[in-house]
Structures are given as C-alpha cells and as structure tokens.
Image (cartoon, rainbow, N blue to C red):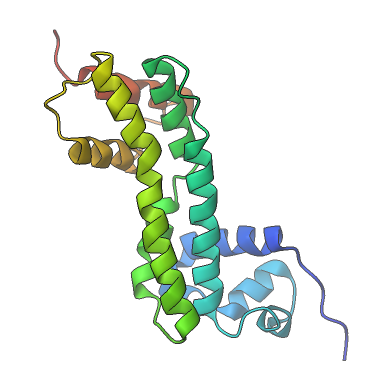
Length: 189
C-alpha cells in the first residue's frame, strides 16, 4: 500500500473553506475534500474521525482569525480611517457569515463538538468588540448620533459584507460607497 501524501494545516483549511462555500454543509464530504487535496480519505481520517469535527475545528480557526483581524484596527486613526479599515477587513471575511451559519447544522456527535460550539458562540461576541469601540468613538467625535442604538448599528455595519456588488464596481469603490452610506445615509443634506 502506498504512503499517504501529506498536507499542511493551511492547505486543509484552504480546501475546506473553498469546498464548504461551494457545496454547503450537506454537500461537504471527506471524499470531496480528499480529492481537492489530492490525498486519500485515510490521510484526512488520521486527523479527524468525521466531517463534523473537522468542520467545527475549521470554524473555530476561522473565527480566531476573524477576531484577530478585526482587533488589529488602529484606533489612533481618525474615525473615517478606522471605519474604512474596518470595512476593508470585513470584506476579507466575506464568507464568514455563510460559513459560521452552518455551525448550528453540525450535529453534536461528540462532546468535542458540543464544547467547540460553545467556544464559537463566545468568540462570536468578541467580533463585536472592535465595532463597538468604533461606534463609541464615532459618537464621541460627532460622526454618529448618540441616540442611535449600538446593536442596530453593529448589525447594520456587519451586514454590509453581504451586499451583492451587482454593479461590478471595483472593491475599493464599492467599499467607499458603503462607507459614504454609513456616514451620510441616503439624504441629500
């Protein structure tokens, strides 16, 4: 029997990311992943006993990366620069909602999965910390009406990454338009 070809964690997560976005949770299989990595299924099963544990580990890693990325915003910049930085970082995480939305469909086939779902839930709240800081600064500097509800603003800003770019605008222009809408709304004033 031939030796199993090795793959890096980076390769595993990259292939998992591409496949889960392409197929969704129900369509994701270890066979498809093995084919994408050009390895045997046994090579993957050496690391993960089932797709549920692999996917929950992937989601935890994706969430860790996302929390780190958003927490690296430079809060010494002007509010406008911070908002732009935040939006650019969020667009790097464009698939995050889709991927993490699948966490609830992962069956609790082991205590490991149940535990990691709780970790994911706790980390989800950490995503909002830098946004909350930004909103607070925006209110303090007069960019955001202090009467506006923080949770509604958080949701509004977070949902901007799901807006489809049907006009085919360059990403830089698309982000600038979203930033203008956040800062000025649709009013002509």
